[in-house]
Structure formats: structure tokens, C-alpha cells
Image (cartoon, rainbow, N blue to C red; front, top):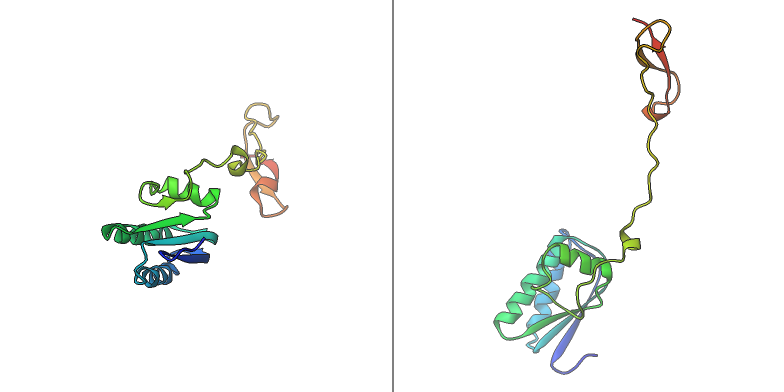
Length: 150
């Protein structure tokens, strides 16, 4: 809830290399208002890269130098995980602890193994030969194979 001694900045969209200057500018404008605390609501950010996080970290450090604070609110688990991986948890004042993502959120679907032809060296009646593609699609995993004699 906004108070007379704080200002709230809501960040939406992307916070990356191309938008970091805009984010820094918006934070600087909030900083010059002179309030004791700047609250940055990041719930609407769809994508982060380190440029966006460094803009927040730099702004937080600048305010701390003048005994003011920047508090980050609304950070979803994915954003918290990125902050944790970037080792910026101590540099940013989040509205709660850094949390690991639940295992189901980071699990990737299993990809079935690609079946590749196994060369048969001595089992072939004509002896060892080289496997070569025969027609079929250009995807190597789906080509038909035949043995070419030497």
C-alpha cells in the first residue's frame, strides 16, 4: 500500500538489455522524488535478463548510499530463481525469501531416445559394409538404411 514516504514503480513487459535504460530511467525518476523508500512491483515482468536485474541492483545500491531503500515486490518463483542463480539475493530487498522452484516447474518432458542403425560387421552374408541412406526424408533419424558392399 502506498504511503507518504514511499513511491511505487510497476514494471511490466520485458526487463532485458534493450529495456534496461528505460528501467534505469524510471527508477531514477522515482528516486529523485526523495521518498524514504521506493517499492518496485515486478509482478508484470514477463522476461528478465541480467541487464534488468543489474539495473535494479544498481538502483538499490544507490539508494542505500543515502540511507534509503528499494523493496522488490511481486516477484514470481521464476524471477526469484533467476535472482538466486545470479547471486543477487543479498543485493536486492525482496518481499520474501528466495525459493527454489518446485521440481515439477523445472522438469522437462522426456525425449525418447533416437534409434540409430547398428552396423552388423560379420553377421552380414557378404561381410562388413557401410551403411548408407536410401531415399526417405532428410531427417537422419528417419532415413531408411541399407548396406552397401565394398
